Image (cartoon, rainbow, N blue to C red; front, side):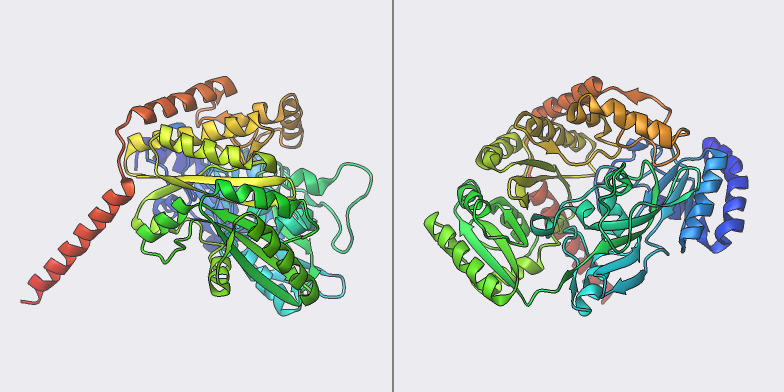
Length: 525
């Protein structure tokens, strides 16, 4: 243990004792090995990131009840110690990893239960640390449909996706995560428990909407403990359709026509040929027919049949080839596994932005040009958010063990800036892109910071996120400097010789397997 770590450990000893008394010794963890597990999220980061951020929490706690969370937050408020909420960390912008150490609250470890499914009032109440899939499946068994969920729903938690106001499966028909929320129990920075809405009815009361204030706040205003969602009657039929096009660009016009018709799919997703090529390199069975549009319909059989016929007509008109129903069913089953190319042992980082649908073809061209310009291996996937909002998720591959490869992050900054120039915006801030608040919100950024300061004057709720990039020693990075730095990363990436990281890692794995087989043969003699 370093001298700095010893000093932190001594300083935290009284806090650890208070937490143990409050929620039980078994629910408070301080071993370095265990804390390391909470020092990163979906995005792999090099150890040098610790220079900028103190990603390693000092204490990990696992509450089981809302009362436990109240006790934890009150202790943190008394000691002025930062709190970082964490679900499954399926996001990749550093939103659920500490910037200044402190207390990390693991919601998935204990607050992961369904409290009530109310069939009469069409709602479900659950703890924030449970996965979306568990809630979705339980409701469906009762003949009820949770209208939307993230593509990572087998592992993503309720509180995590709500905190980023996520868009995902079902958003086109039933809205984003915030549209599904009836009510939440949240703990404010001083330890006060607040209900943000109403369990049984819509919150259209006059006054400021507390649901909308907390949804999308990335845990910077309050800690979400329970959530109540509105539900729909389960559909009579769900139908998967898949259509292939030679290129992704050619899928833009039929996509526009579907969204300008009376057809109302549950979900429309798209993938380019590069995506399927990378899946094949990872040893997966993948479509070889080019780019695809995947459409999911649900509802009464008569309505689904009409929508299917209408979509077939539109796709045929624009040269789309309908693939077999078993292929479409497979694509629907794979909707939660967009990044299986990682199984060759490499990292992948997505860039996320929402854009006007009429910029679809232009954005496809931009993404390909940017990947080529920065010498990156990547692909484009995405989905419709509503009839005029499309989410693009271009991703690229890199070796997380190769520090120069981290300059590939310049892609995200360039893609984010591009989206703003065409009437769109990037998705999410976290720790890494918190400096985007000013260019995205303009003069409104000041009022967002004012709200944060008013509600959380000691800045203990997930500090260093959303409202601005702040390094571990309190150094603030202004937006202009952040953009210069990201631009420099892009320039450096252009100068790095092009390498096929997929082929390199496949070759390394093949050599590793050969060595193991050789050692096994020698050992048997």
